[in-house]
Amino acid sequence: MKAPPFAYVRAGSLADVFALWSAAGPDAKLLAGGQSLLATLAFRLSEPSTLIDISRVAELAGISAVGDGIRVGALTTHAELGASDLVRRHAPLLAEAVPLIAHPAIRNRGTIGGSLAYADPAAELPACVVALDATIVARSATGERRIPAAQFFTGLYATALADNELIAAVELSARKPQERAVILELARRSGDYAMAGIAARAQVSGGTLVDPRLVFFGVGAAPVTATAAMAALAGKSATPDTIAHAQAALDADLDPPADLHGGPDMKRYLARVLLARALTRLTGAEEARAA
Image 1 (cartoon, rainbow, N blue to C red):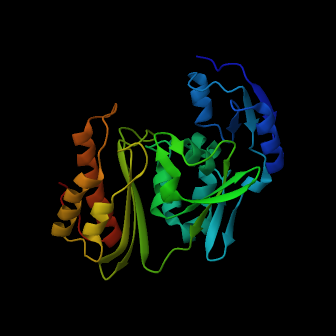
Image 2 (cartoon, rainbow, N blue to C red):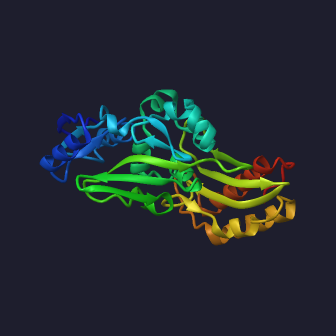
């Protein structure tokens, strides 16, 4: 199929973005990397009246140290994210996620802001920012809002962004001492969306898990924080019995819908497998048998 007809304008600054957006009306869409938007246009799942190109807005670009953490501009591409020394030092989970995202051509164009705003439940970066307790910095013509990542994803392809509000940046705290993180997923082919995935983070002291964070993707309408499994692991070592208890607790955390990959039971099984593998990676323990 071909994209529907639309007008195209390019913004040169944030002020320009909001002026153009207001003039274009409610059916306008922002264009950054375009890796999600252009596909929806091609299939006519989206029919905007106007595309507002924000790819050259300098205020939305760059990765910088801020206080004891980092600020990642919304226009940062996946490839730039993976190559950044600051990201690898302060938020290595994000850098580790990059090779899992689609293919090099998409990683060279797709942006972190676009991925978070599109809010695909099978995407890696939304789960990562929730696991890292990141803050989403949203901008509108009237000011700035700071939204905890855990409150940002509100449903299937839905976010807490208001009308004519965009993601300006993502802010992340510095990596804590003894903190480790891992992202794992199961996909039918390299580059495919995950059938199920996990972004996990914890401080590991003498093999004991402190403040574990477990966020699953591909198993719900948005990133799913596994609070019951986290409670089963907090302050404990990743022994086979502890892992089994955490896997059992996932039944209270996950209610996955069926999709083209399989049904809820298969999704739960994959989540248990991924949890065991993630804990093995976090603690360096011998691989436990998945349920």
